[in-house]
Image (tube, rainbow, N blue to C red; front, side, top):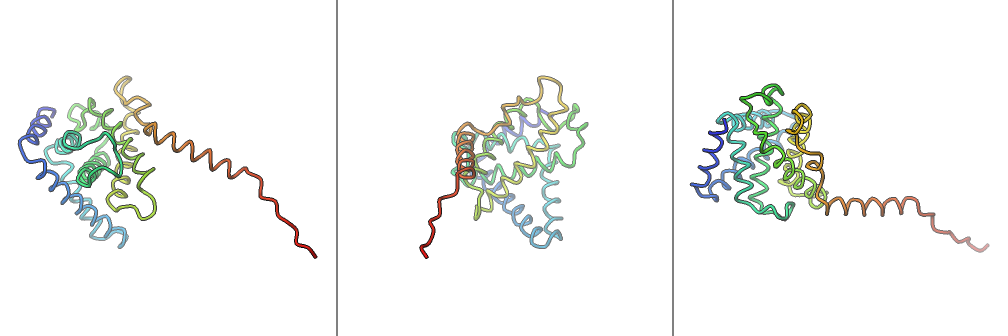
Length: 217
């Protein structure tokens, strides 16, 4: 399994990154449109199309395409400042990967995921959790409020699904194989801002009400 994944990752080096970005954008947009349609119609063909496309892509090459997509997103995009400011192409690539990973995790038994023929590579698990958590926390803090971009909204949704499933799965990994506790934490900058906002909210909530004057009779 690892050999095919390495071959796919190497193949990405031989083709135009712009072509891979374009393909990621196309599939990501198709999934976004299916998601929007499914929500508007509360299911229907949009939901069926979403699961059919996600299943087909997530199981392509025995799950190796999912790993190759993550390698591409890491190797060809700048992760020094993850969040809403990253290029749209990166958002599409990570949204596509997170959707396929979440789909793969949701339809594969934990015994299969932990077995010798697992489509997951444990050596990349901690690295993925760190990057995905940083991105999800930053997007949630900086760019996923009211009126947020539809790609960011879907990206946050799918990252949440994938991370939640991986957190459950990591509880069954042998000691030393699971991601460390700090891998699941938001970036320090986001944590500091969150603590500052929480402290301000607590001060506002506990502050005495302003004195009210009495009208003269």
